[in-house]
Length: 268
View (cartoon, one colour):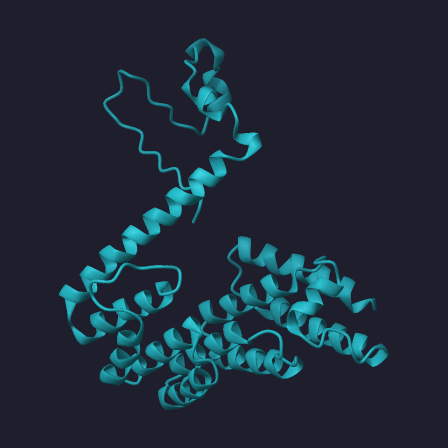
């Protein structure tokens, strides 16, 4: 592997440092992206078959650099910073860099259409999503993207046509319809149909609760979770703790007028 990979690795660490510290400067992210593209092209100079498909880049590099995850985080950062033109450019670069015969560029198409709409290019976003939906009619993401694009273009009737192909108001939300359901909520809110929007929100909440419950059940079945319940059920003696060790913490006892509000969200 050429040295640009190590440069990308170093820069990607800097990117996440910026993210954690809420640094609004995206320069290091842009540098990391340019370095990543250079690393891929450098490998192809030596081996034209290197990473023809997007997923193969991570596979070939033994997932050492986390390319896919980093790219999606980069696009999130650009979106959060309102840098939608750059977001489109990055998507175009990635889409043009790979063959996409074994894998769909769905994530990057979705990001591009979202960026177009954010820049006020609603008609272009609709055209892009309509072509994508024609090419991948079974893709839930392409359907959701087209719904959002038509909403942004204020074509509510056209958006509803796509929604009704996937769900009706009384349907249960499933893995196969979740993204369309979320887009449908946005549609009915935009139309001012709060009753239907609330109904679909409740259906989504039930789906989210089911998924969280399933994940918790799977988590509890893992070997390292044995005994966790017994551990947390034990009674602890207050004498085991020294208040001086917890200067910044607020531990309320049974006699306190305040109630501790602790939300345990292991999966978000």
